[in-house]
Length: 334
Image (cartoon, rainbow, N blue to C red; front, side):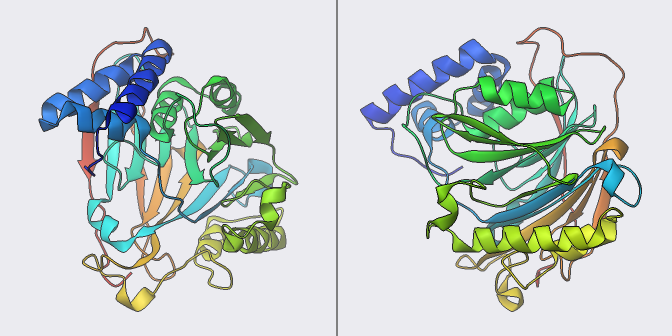
């Protein structure tokens, strides 16, 4: 776990964020307490990190296609995740079963949650960074939003409604797809949430707010190039987008989609930055296919989420989650 300085001001702000979370979704307070106790962590340092840490902006690219526009006639989602190559040593597959909530399958390098999560109702959720925007006020971190939505929502409509109702600490785009092929992107900032819907049966996500003045900012010019390139490639395959076509898009080098110094992306390279994994989700089939490295050269491994019997989530505060963790084989050269 990274270290953060627990100054008085940051501790006070963390307390306000913790209070907001406790009022909205108490099970995540239980999770926080479990992490502190189980890891024997310093409480002040943990609270500052867990509730208030500013997340560095990372460049990611993704797309989702509704069922009527895919070869298999079922929805499909693809995404690349860019980060420090050193973080690949922490990547793992997590299956989480929550008493009273939906089971989830996620892939992550993060100690707290997953930036990509599929639940047993066939709802898939993923994040991408957006440029910081809005007034910083007490709110929820991205990992809390991911856990809350994946544990309690069965459809895209439910997920978007919940995301729009929450106070957000940071600026992130949440791409949501369900087993029926309903797609949306909720672009959340501390000032509110803007929802984008698919055009021609697909939606693309990079790291800017599409159709806003942010497209012309120099914060991440590669984001606009990747967005346009993915859009162009998807349109070539409509209305029969295949899983292989999605994987080819994720492996593309013409714009910043599959990025980084491929020949030096070793796990011990703490200065390198690039694509640390790619992922393809089939929500209706409850599967994730993961390439744990550059997707242009790393084989995908398919994992299926085991569905559990049961209906909607029960009351909140119903116990700590149970985790099952595994690591896909790692390709040291990317």
